[in-house]
Amino acid sequence: MGLRPNLLTRRAAGVASTTFALLLSTAAVGVVPAASAYSAAPGNASCAEPADVHSDARVRGGSKAAHNRHDPNQLTATQVQEREADFAAALRNSMLRSKSSIRTGSTEGRTVALAPISVPVVVHVIQKDSTRAGGNIPDSMINSQITVLNQAYSGATGGAATGFTFQLQKINRVTNASWYPIVQGSSAERSMKTSLRTGGKNTLNVYLGELSDDLLGWATFPKRTLDVMDGVVVLGESLPNGTATNYNKGDTGTHEVGHWLNLYHTFQGGCSGSGDSVSDTPAEASPAFECPTGRDTCTASGKDPITNFMDYTYDSCMYQFTAGQASRMVNAWNAYRASA
Ligand SMILES: [Zn+2]
Image 1 (tube, rainbow, N blue to C red):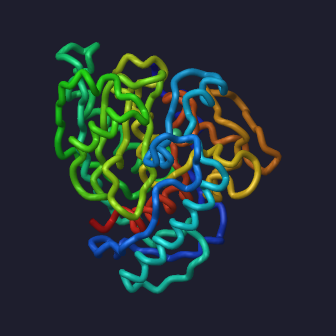
Image 2 (image 1 turned 60 degrees about the vertical axis):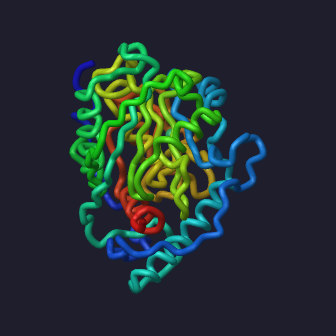
């Protein structure tokens, strides 16, 4: 693949409104987490395992049918409502802990300053044997993935700077054929994560390998208490220079980490309601695939945000987060992940 085709059309992401209700610093870092009664399964009867209710899947391929088949955990309106209520409560708690002066009412606050938030990353490479086909991807691809994350979240590829940086702590290579491929929602996935997950809520655990059902990856949304399932699972060959055609520039990793930091898809909720709970991402009726021109699926203003990392387009098509998404991630960090 050549250069990203949208390089010439990039625009700086502006702050879309003046309705930000929160003024938030990163002062909550390091404080003790409040006890939480938050439970894992907000009313989803179709999921076998509660942990999967908070997960999300990105799928290879270009059809909505494929998306629906492989992404059973796309959140319902009720699930979003429950998550947003929990987010608001968790954010209030974090502000009280940090004794900041706050006004509540929105979880899309404005950050006063994008002080760097350093995220420790542990990468688990799941292999069935020592061959490349068996999952043995080189360290160079993992290092490139970390670079892609740092570029995406710094705004270097376009869009808003988020304040997040990613530091690779360790590459943990594990040969275990019973965990390969990694099957979403399986007892093997739980057993793998139970054995391997390390660090506190602030530690990004990345699991790489072949995945079930043509999936590119999935992620857990943040919770108030540390969950052993917490982390992102990414197709190893989606890393930069991997073999997953059209999805091998590392933006599956970027997308899944977005969920891990509490972002929804840009098409969450379709054209109605609060959509993805971010004000500066135009509403979108459904996922966009490949790299469509001029797509505009909702009557509300703004064309579909097909270049946003939280859509489903090709890696070459997506290159930005918005200022609203950046604020939401920083607030989510303070609410959920900053305290051990
Ligand atoms: Zn997703």
